[in-house]
Each structure stands twice: as C-alpha cells, then as structure tokens.
Length: 135
Image 1 (spheres, rainbow, N blue to C red):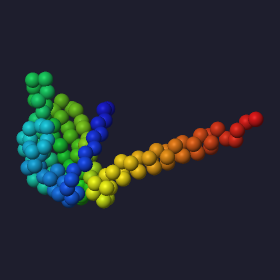
Image 2 (tube, helix red, strand yellow):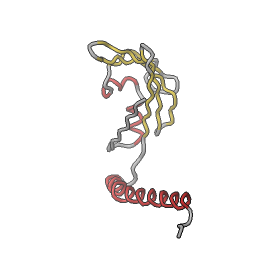
Image 3 (tube, rainbow, N blue to C red):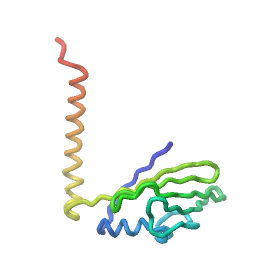
Image 4 (cartoon, helix red, strand yellow):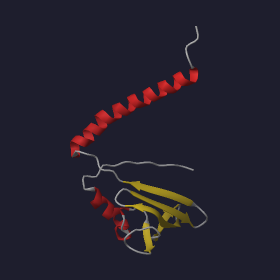
C-alpha cells in the first residue's frame, strides 16, 4: 500500500480551516475530483459522498465515508472504489503558536531539537544493546 503525506501552512484560524474542509459543498472548490453526491453538507461520522475520478480515459467512482471527526483537529475518511479498491485519508490540523514567529521557531528551533533528541535516543539504544565496551 502506498502512503502520501503533505503539509501546508494556512494563514487562518484553525476553526476557519476546519469549517472549510468539513463541508461537502466546499469540496468542489478544492478537491481534485468531480463530486457526484453527498449524504449531507456538514461532515460528521457517517457522512458519505461519491467522487468521480478520471483515470486513463475512464471514470472511477469512489464512495467516501467519514470514519472519525474530532473538531477542529482530525478528520479521517475511508473510501471504496468500484472494482474493490480501498483508501483511507486523514486531515490533521494544528495551530502553530506565535504566527510567523512560531513558524520560524518551529523550523529553526524545533527541527534542531528533534534532531538532537533522536540522536540522543539512538545513542542510548546503541549503548543499551551493545553493553559496556569490551577491552
């Protein structure tokens, strides 16, 4: 199974982003596929919709259903395609503290700290596995 992960920063309050991405009527503004039908507009657990994706001169229909919804941070949806294909997607929303400063701090400080923490963890794992140095 393939996995794709993308990240983007949106200069808007998290609640505004949640409101936009969790309405099937908005999907036509940002989804790559043609939206056929939806069971409701506001996405909640159980909401479903059908998308028609053009693939190699044909159309593949995928029916999506909201599996988890934890406003305003997490939306999980599962899909079933005609022909038996399956997919799962997750939108995770986070607030970066401090606006642009928070973004810079996240990039410059947090990445370096994470790298140090990972190096420290790996060093501890190495020492625990290899044991005391042999003479």
